Image (cartoon, rainbow, N blue to C red; front, side, top):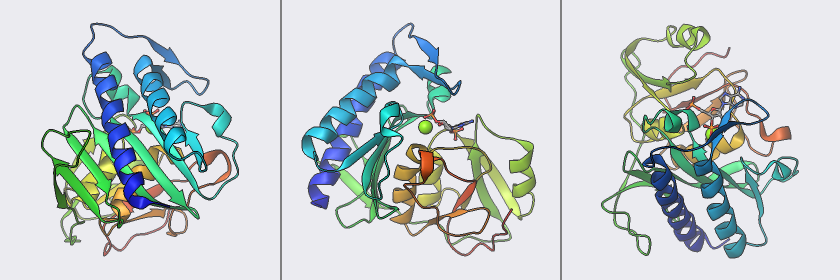
Length: 265
Ligand SMILES: Nc1ncnc2c1ncn2[C@@H]1O[C@H](COP(=O)(O)O)[C@@H](OP(=O)(O)O)[C@H]1O
Ligand SMILES: [Mg+2]
């Protein structure tokens, strides 16, 4: 795998998809439909999905591709693949709350080794560089070349005063009960895979998810967190969350900086 080419392609496609999404975000009106699982989908999800999957298939024809919006990719049985959530946080998008992201990742042997997370309405762009180190880029996000980047790293958590981040649209009692096991100084809520990135930069210490997600929701954020020194553990056995599972469904998990004494649920 040419990781340098992959990084440039993933970054460019995420930026192009972000432009498309923002055009629709700023339009007066857009169509919202319910999918078979009852979750919403918009023309922005579909346009971004087409743009990214065409770009990935053209650049990397030999590697399997799984995308949220193409259900025929959901029964693949693979350990190495590209995985895309073209618009994570669709509910945030629909309510024009800004916390939505474009997500593209590479999974190798069940591990998300490279990823890009772009939050166009927040002007935040995170990705793993060719060596797998995670960076945040700032500036005007030119498509042709990478601007100013800074390496990001997870916090060294103060376990007596933890900062937690949890879902904005899927916050429930089970999540609050789990959070209450810890000495939490403050909590923030965020939509989409941005939560992984907030742990990756040290803006939060951990992100518990006691609710359903699919692998495309988590792979890119997981790659960014890994490349910043963090980890994502299943909440049932505290083993690393792996990818390429049947139907690409995730168990409950916690995304975290190392050094917190976690308890299984
Ligand atoms: N019941 C459910 N089954 C599967 N995935 C779910 C789900 N409820 C929420 N999700 C996933 O959680 C994501 C939203 O996460 P958050 O609440 O952290 O913002 C959604 O991503 P999409 O917006 O891409 O559909 C959706 O895929
Ligand atoms: Mg999603």
